[in-house]
Length: 132
Image (cartoon, rainbow, N blue to C red):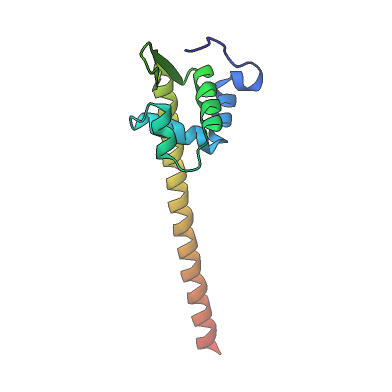
């Protein structure tokens, strides 16, 4: 980890960290990029329209502080920096995947219930017209 500094306060728990990451579309986007092998900041910015350097660097630093990402600096000219998932980060994104799966299941179930409700309303309306 870059600074070795751990967050304190509500973000120090995994639940607080999860809430912080899930509440930020850029954190989720950056994690997705790193998982897909886009590990360098310049490549991340080019891959995501609208992602500013300031926001990207803030999110990368926060994810490093949480221990989800690690920063590797190479002593080259020009300097090269890459980010990768830590062991904890791999477990963390697995949880994010499970949440995404639950969200998809819930959405499919709600869509199915909405379609059944529309069919039932249509059946009732047809029955009312037939009785009239």
